[in-house]
Amino acid sequence: MTKKTSKPNDQQDERVHVSLDQPVVEYEEGSKAFFENVAADYHKSMYNPFWKLSQSLIFHLMDDYIVLPNLGKGKQYLDAGGGTGRLTWHILETDKTAKVTLFDFSPDMLAQAENIGRELGLLDRVKLVEGNLMDMKGIKTHAFDAAVSANNVFGFVYDSSLAMEEISRTTKLGSMIGLFGIPNAYHGAFFNQTIGRYDESRKILETLRGTYTPEMPEINFFTPDGLFNLYLSSGIRPYLVTGMPVTIYPGYADTDPRFVSDKAQTIADPQVWNNVFELERGLLDSTARIDGVYQVQAARGNGLAAIGKREILVPY
Ligand SMILES: C[S@@+](CC[C@H](N)C(=O)[O-])C[C@H]1O[C@@H](n2cnc3c(N)ncnc32)[C@H](O)[C@@H]1O
Image 1: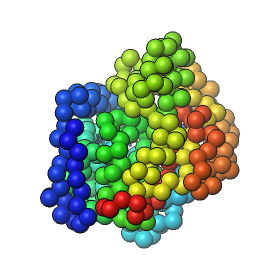
Image 2 (image 1 turned 90 degrees about the horizontal axis):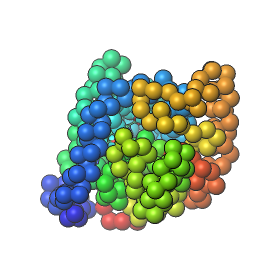
Image 3 (image 1 turned 120 degrees about the vertical axis):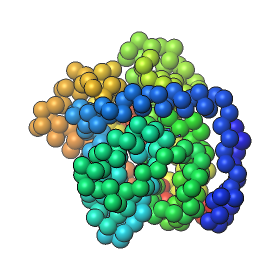
Image 4 (image 1 turned 30 degrees about the horizontal axis):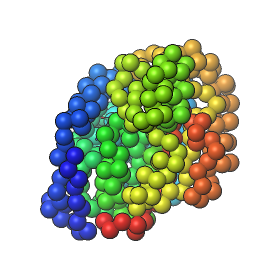
């Protein structure tokens, strides 16, 4: 892959853009075809108690570190790989002064996002942009005050370093950057063992690439320290790397947005769900706040999460 160069000013048109070679094109075609298939059903996963739990924990962390400290200040957010806009709608509903650029390479997910945004009456504060996170041409340097991304986006991006450099370039100094629901290599290996895919389990640990199920495209997996270093090498000082949920995991059926596994069904009762949410939130709150130290619970998380601050460590 040809690496791009970034200029330390707003002249993004002068940048040399990434040219994608064949393996990248094939990898991305697999992801796009997958999202073309799931786009119409994607929102249904929110009726799944496990994904509802996972999303509520993501909102909790994102609000605490990013949205609430910026409340009422008319900030510009990037929702990287925003899909149908879960994070976007939450930000816009929480902060009536915020604006969000929802950036995604799947036209099918963006079409769903547009429908949902219209129904919610929030389209006037969102810009839907179709493009590749590895080369965000058209987005100016230092355009955003904060960037967020959730639910496997960095698994699907072929080269996470390029995407992180682009997030770094397009955010202002001092911006908070949160990545949530990053595929955890240890959990990927565990999950594959539980469904009898021992070779896949080994492959994930050895190569940090693999699949959760035979139906899903190949993705990248991360270790907590790998995620920590991804931040650092892109000029973003990591505040925390953690994992969630850590006391309950999804089953096979939960990998398809139309279904709910027996495991997820165990927390369907609102009282039980609430107890599990409080337990998980307590774990996040009690362990996630020590600057720069990644947390013991990270390796146990179904997904990893990291929050950091854009600093002058690289010359964007
Ligand atoms: C599992 S979805 C998550 C969507 C949303 N963030 C959420 O939390 O519901 C992953 C999204 O990442 C997008 N994506 C994957 N690779 C991408 C890339 N290289 N550039 C832009 N978007 C990408 C996909 O199109 C998809 O919408």
